[in-house]
Image 1 (spheres, one colour):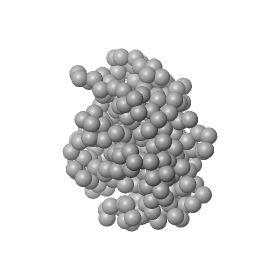
Image 2 (image 1 turned 90 degrees about the vertical axis):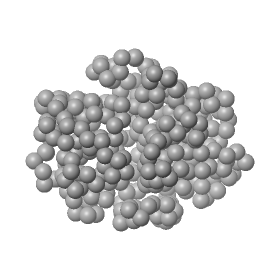
Image 3 (image 1 turned 135 degrees about the vertical axis):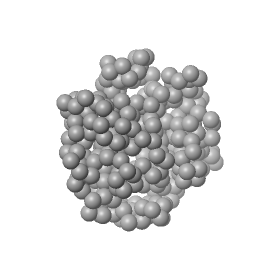
Image 4 (image 1 turned 45 degrees about the horizontal axis):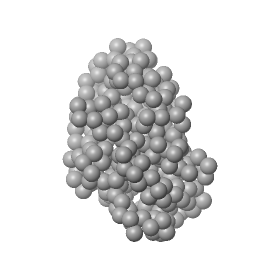
Length: 303
């Protein structure tokens, strides 16, 4: 049995359901993989998943596409590649409270934004504001990552970035109305988040093992399409106490189509990814221009 570890990008939620299903249903075991799933709750997000990957603490990390570029261009570069994407569609959005006076991105000028302090995040939001006719003035604060959502609900910030299929579902259940600003609606060709990232060198060295891991993972996520009640039951045993009131059935309902199909699960399209990489370069957010093929290993490993 081959032991592997994956660091989740957030506390267990609907974006992770396929990992837990594959674990519970024995899909990993059949591929001779013993997978340990690590939640950021274990260290209160002291290290990001990508940092854990760089340090060799895990074999895989869930992270946005931006992390692949960020780690490749830092002072001591670490080459990461995406071996699969969890979602084919972008289910994230910048949100404000529905009863606020911020009904469009341009109204965020001068407002407080709760940031995860990701390398390009603040500038991406500023570009959204500009694309909507604003100046791009934003006051960013950097709370503890696991508490960022609550800063919006408590009024300590005016906006933040969420997954509509998780925090958005939670807000609906609580009767909290939100204004949603999707990046694609405001001229930003955002690509994939989260992706399953791995060390480039290890993905080449252990390609056959990684393929077995991906086969089992794919089976877990696609299982959710036809077996929703069982998938929800499995996920319900993993979510933290703070999320027990999230309507898991609703969360899965708005997510499951984005998992893709038998022929498309996990695949990252070079064209879509390249549009985002070119946009980063055009806006001066990244000086080095990357080709999608440099960071996309999904087409080779998802066979």
